[in-house]
Structure formats: structure tokens, C-alpha cells
Image 1 (cartoon, rainbow, N blue to C red):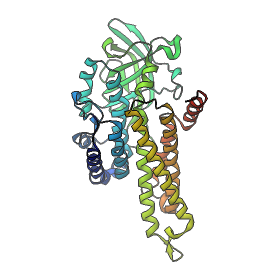
Image 2: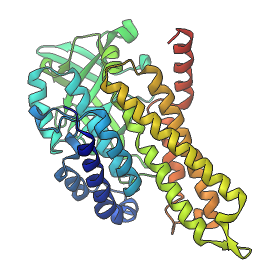
Image 3: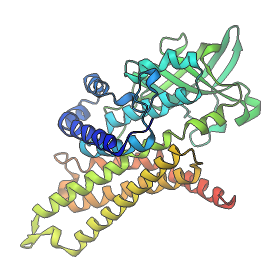
Image 4: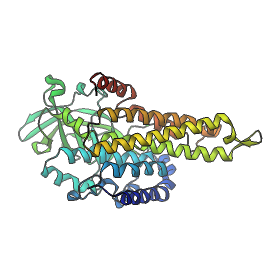
Length: 381
């Protein structure tokens, strides 16, 4: 079901107030501690955020993309906590939604209720040490085994890996067939042969664990296969439309950087006047506003097209590229406006530099997105 405009406004108001009053006050402490905060996750779960997009039959709210996108933007903007935002959206968009889209009824009943309430945290295992943008180069294999499959291989840069309970995994059941030999599985923590490494230390988002996942003769029952053998790449393209919403928080990052920069520029005085009165600063603020409004429109349009069942290949590539690069531009402008203070730990503005850079790399680099756009243009799409 889709919420009315009043319901969307109510959700936005609730989420932004929660982000501002509950999440934002502790973000610096959580980042400095560098650990996933289970108490913060519990608070998010109490609000029902992990299940917003899941069907009510499995404990979710049954909302559409258009209902949720404004709330995601508001949460990121008001909380300035990309750690918990990233963990939440990885769980919901990259793990729960693929099971919702691709799983059979038994699989949905087995996993989604616990994921909707956040009792089980999800992760998506795609990237490998030798295969990032090129998923056809995946080396993790899934060989037939009595009653199921045996997985061998490793994944890296996996968001939520150190804390995840449910792993959606892409592996090859027929390596000789390349992309046509890929198959998707759900693997649960505790499965024999599955281990996760220590959290990888990122430049920012220290409270959002990222790590490696290892499969060493990991036995997976046949009932944990998502869909048919050899359809993994097709399924990924089908279910990853939800992953395209994972960059929406960068609209919130632009918004928070503009808000903080404007406040600082109206208070900071040089040469006897506010720096907000200098033409160079005004230009940077104006450019941030332009990028913010265009990014918001792109995100809303993408959600609308998703809800209508349109092919979003071009829309998603354009939106992902523009929004993440706009966030990067806004971060640099914000630090420039803050001057020396922008380089100090005392101010949070500098953190957005590395946060924005992750956006232009993760989920398909800007260069990969431009290649996608060019190919779609050549096909007349």
C-alpha cells in the first residue's frame, strides 16, 4: 500500500524529530568509540524503521519508495550519523528487500519477520578482493552437495558483515558460464564454514561495521537458494533497484552541510562584516542550494518511477552519479566556508569529505555509472 500525503508528512515529521533528538546527540561519541551501537539500533527498531518497505504480512509497514525517500533524506540530514543510517539502509535495501522480491513464501516467512523488527540484521555479499565493479569476475563458488551446496570463497568491503545474522550471497554454480552461472543464496550466521573477519577501519562511519566474509566448505541447504540456478545476475539487477535508494542519504548530507554552512557564514565575521556577505561565499552557498534542489528532485523522481514499475536503469545511473558528486562538491564547499575550523575535530563538517567520497565509489563508481549511461544512450533508452 502507499501512504497518503498526510501520512508521508507524518512519517517525515516523526523520523526527523527522532533523528534530531535521539540520534544526533550521540553521533560524535559513537564515531569516536568506533563500534556498532546496539542500543541505537534498538531505538531505530522500536520506531519500525527496518521494516518500512516490507509487506505487512511479514511484519513490515508496506510503504512504497515514494513514501520512504523523504524520511531517509530527513533522517540523514537531521542525525548527521551516516554510520547508523548506512547500517539501517544496508539491512533494509540490500538484504531484506532482495529476499522480499526474490524469495519464495517459505523463505519470506523464515527471514522477513525477524528482519522487519530488526532482530536479525542483514548484509549483501557481492564484492570480492578481485571483483568489485565487475561482478562477472566473482570467484566464490557454490558446488552441488547432497541436499544443497558447498560455498567456497571470500567477500570484502561488506557493509554490516561483522554484525549481520543473514547474508545474501552471490556465488557461481557454473564458473565456466561467467555471468550466466551466478546464483543467489541466503546464508545464516552460525552456518558451518562461514566466518567474518575483524571490522575494516574506514576513514569515517566508524560505527558502521564493514568487513570480510569467508566461506570455507560452507554447507548451504537447497532451500536457501534464492530463485533458479544461473539466474543470479538477472536477479541482482532486478532486486538491486532497491539498492539504488541507498545513496538517497547523500541528499540529506548536502542539506545538513548547507544548513551548517549558512549558520556559520552568518555568524563568522571578517574585515568587519559577516562572511555570508562576501560574494565568493554567497556563490558557494548558492551552488550548494542548486545541487540540493536538483538532487532532491532526482531522488523523488527515481522513487516515483520505481513505484510505477518503470525501467529505472537510466534514471538510477543519472541520479546516483549526480547526487553523490553533488554531495562531494557540497562537502568541499562547506569545509572551505568553515576555513581552518573545517579541518578541526571540534567541528563535524570535515567528516563529510570522506563520507561523500564513499558515495562516488560504493555501489558502482561514478566512472562505472557514466559507462552505463553511455551504453543506454547508445541503445536509444
